[in-house]
Image (cartoon, rainbow, N blue to C red):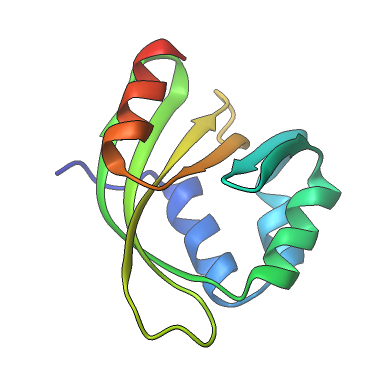
Length: 118
């Protein structure tokens, strides 16, 4: 397993603390945010997701790709659901360490396949 890069680890900490300001500070202004319910762009979209999701994320493995793409396998828990969900998120990190994309997938296999074509 590769180590989760610092900006992605910091993002997990911000999400788990429901700290939308800290999460937004880690991202580009036009960050791509996506998941099963749709996708969009912008730091305000990210801020709203962090404030509203209530999810906690525990990274379990990191899979780096070229171009600053990193797929992170995660254990996720949502409020009111005691089930631990195995999910994955594709992150794109800019050369200056900011998050330009975070796209959630229901499976690690789907996220890895997306990363191979990113």
